[in-house]
Amino acid sequence: MIKIGIVGAAGRMGRNLLVAVENNKNLQLAAAIVNPSSSLVGCDVGELVGLGKTDIKIVGNITEIIEDIDVLIDFSTPSVTLTNTKLCVETNKAIVIGTTGFTEKEKKEIECCSASIPLVFAPNFSVGVNLMFNLLEQATKVMGGYADIEIIEAHHRNKVDAPSGTALKMGEVIASCLDKDLKDIAVMSREGIIGPRKSGEIGFSTIRAADIVGKHTALFADIGESIEIKHNATSRMTFANGAVRAAHWLADKSSGFYSMQDVLGL
Ligand code: NAD
Image 1 (tube, rainbow, N blue to C red):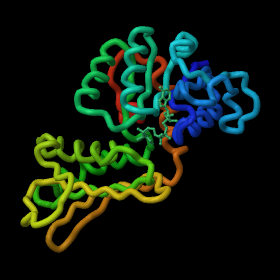
Image 2 (cartoon, protein in one colour):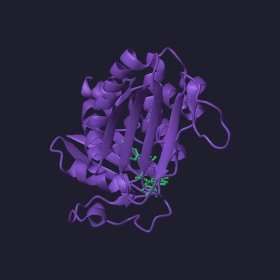
Image 3 (tube, rainbow, N blue to C red):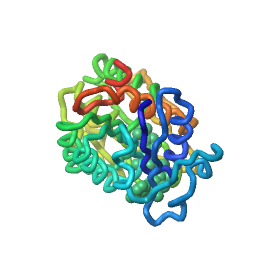
């Protein structure tokens, strides 16, 4: 059995991850790690998600349990995830990272860590979104040279980073197909007298509202026709099941920086 630790266990994703691990016959939930200041520290994990008594205690200090796990799944905050990734390097553990909102420097640090441990890093663990990345490549190859490309994303009101990690990844996939660097062609906001749209740019629009789990659209618009590639997530369990699938896949891999596309063999 592969022993799993979940960081951010009391969060929106963490609670879904606890259920997803419990539902997977090949994985064993070994630890749930929450914010050290949380009143849940010391409680039974089962109390958190209504699983009944599990005899697994919720901890606030990850160093207490790191030796008890094989793979860490971390959906928390960028600074917490970066610290935990370094701890995984020191203790030789694999890690699945779902946290978004990293700076470029932080992303590079994470990539460096994967030189010595197996690591899956994905801004979106849903199967549909990763299939969408492939569809974007196809659309860009055919229309990318002349179409106006826009990326629109919508998320719940509590999301703290924008545009979403998935929207940025969509932009990176398209930019890389065009042999460009996303930062050179991305337009993150528009306001006032901005003049006509420049060809070759990728525009981003962000919506934050109520309880939207995650919607992403890529628009490829030409004069006279346009196509939209859309994904709509309606439950966080889709991300949780994807991350659990990644943890299972990662358990016997050697060190390296893997994506969800690698996990799915796309
Ligand atoms: P959330 O705020 O509900 O949960 C984050 C949790 O981390 C909170 O409970 C917080 O208390 C906890 N935390 C803070 N410091 C901690 C520490 N030191 N140790 C352990 N836990 C700590 O947020 P969420 O909606 O669950 O999202 C978490 C992250 O996952 C965000 O970055 C979000 O964008 C990302 N996300 C990724 C995917 C994906 O598929 N990759 C899907 C959904 C969300």
